Length: 224
DNA sequence: GTCCTGTACA
DNA sequence: TGTACTGGAC
Image 1 (cartoon, protein in one colour):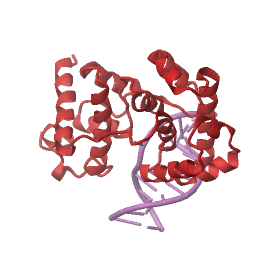
Image 2 (cartoon, protein in one colour):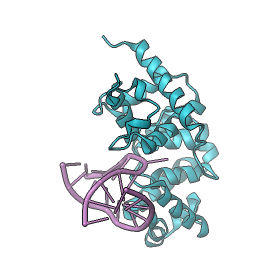
Image 3 (cartoon, rainbow, N blue to C red):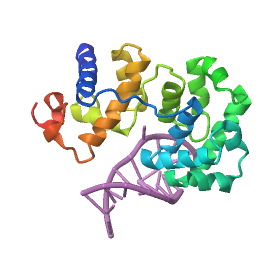
């Protein structure tokens, strides 16, 4: 029998430990919701420092708008986003996103933001190149919708703690967080960002458990 | 499971 | 020289 209270206590405990260790992360660094959407696509399997270069290129070319990306020739757009890697598939992804935005919301983010969250999520998942993580990142970080973002780091950290199995599905993980946290956009925002921070600082692929703020509650640390 | 790809850092 | 990077399509 699963102990739901224990899950709830641990999910909240981990958040406070990470927050104490690393402080507020203030994601997502961007000047507009559309910039967040573009970043969410470009950062797929790419280091954020490389995404920043691609976004800087787009800004310099006055191309960081739905219309500009939709209308720009494929090779030209590929050249601009090249630093973020996988540039041919990512051009297709950005094009698909902007065509969807144009056809359904006249490229108007405010109009998009007013739509029902579940409906938006379904629509985004149907767009080429947008899977659950990218969809939830866009909904949370661009539009402020209360969805918890799951990524490879979340799976790594929480399966090591012993709260989950790494093979559990995206929806399983999302349910764990959304069922055990108050529905709070700020907390969802910071928690995911802190998970990314922790995966870089300590819970690497080869973990550094010596100076880990979660070692007291993590099975992997060997202390429990 | 494999492919897509430039960049940084050990 | 190898490895990892805030995944998703097929």
